[in-house]
Every structure is written in C-alpha cells, then in structure tokens.
Length: 253
Image (cartoon, rainbow, N blue to C red; front, side, top):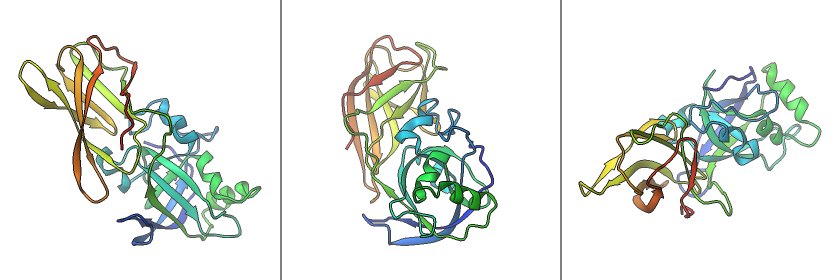
C-alpha cells in the first residue's frame, strides 16, 4: 500500500463507458506519493516489485476503488488538472501499480507524475498548494489504452516461487484497455485447463503446476464487458526459474 504525503486535491473524474471521457463523472480528490526521488514504490499492492517504480517512465499511481480487487492493476489513465493558473492542458498518463486510499482520493500519483500536471516552472507551486490542502481545482481522469511499443507481454516468475511445486507470476506490459480476469494452464496428462488463483494484484499462482513446457490461456475483458480467451504456447520452459522473466512473443490486442 502506498505511503503518501498529505496533499489533497478536489477533483472531477470522468470514467469512459465508450471511447470518450465525458459520459459519467463524479467529484473526488487526489494526492501524491512522498517518495523523495519521485518514482513509484517497489512494494506496491499490484506485485510489480522493482518494475513498479519505473513503469511508464515512473508516471504511476495508486488507486482505491479503481483497484477492483487487483483487476485494475496495469490500467492506464489520463489525468488533467483544470486549474489554469497552475496546470497545463495535457496532464499526465499514468499506470496503476498500487492500492492506496485516504480522504476519498481516487488517484495517488507518484511525485514525478504529479508535477507533470503543472505548467513549466509551476510544479513547486502546485505541490505546495496541495501539501497544505488549499488547492481548489478540478481534475479529471479517464481510462486510456496502455502503450508499450515494441514490447511483448512479459511473464515474470516471482522470487517466492519454488520449482516445481509452486508457481507465482506477474504479468507485465499489459497493453490496451482490457483487464486480464483469468489465467489458466494446460494440464496435458488430464487433458484439461487448470485455473490459477489471483494471489493479489497482478500476481497469479498455482500449487503443483503442470510439468514440462507450459501452455497458457488468458481471459481478457474489455470496456463493453465482452470476454475472450487468448491462448499462448510454451510460455515457460520445462524447468522454469524464480526471478526470471519470460517473453510471450506476442503483443496483446
């Protein structure tokens, strides 16, 4: 869970039901991480580890209700501040890497991402106003497609996995606006798919996983609620190792 400074901003959030951000809105608030270097945290609730510090160039965010029991991990949002004296029109694109809440906040941005809301040379002013809680502004955020050009979907075996008895993995470079809602591995000797458990965040695990090179399928859900299965062949080698990342050779669409 994120540790953050007291920096509360009243905001308006727009959650897109179609392709735009003008459909549904609600009033909310925002704050930012107190990390001195301005990046995210390696101990975020999504389970990205050190990757969570620098995803999207360090423009990351903790969320509360958008966390959605972990299925919101890896989702990207456009956040803008509508206080023209301090904030630019572009805003910042952030990816969800953590869970955090406090005083009805929806976004807890990394400091690096937060300052990108400001006009040039106004970042310190924006942070100072927020720190004392006097900033009266409107921000909004909408879900956008995550973009990792040239990067395939990556499966990282977590360090607490134990070959061959316990496999835990985290999914990286999740593009688009889709949630991964289920992960299954093919059990060749039983001729059936076995579901992995969502341990927490973006981490999935299984006790006594299938032996040999593993085939996998992902259940992907879009904004419209439609679901589909994406099948992957030989995602892991016969002998997989904890702490190693495996390239899927595909870019999820």
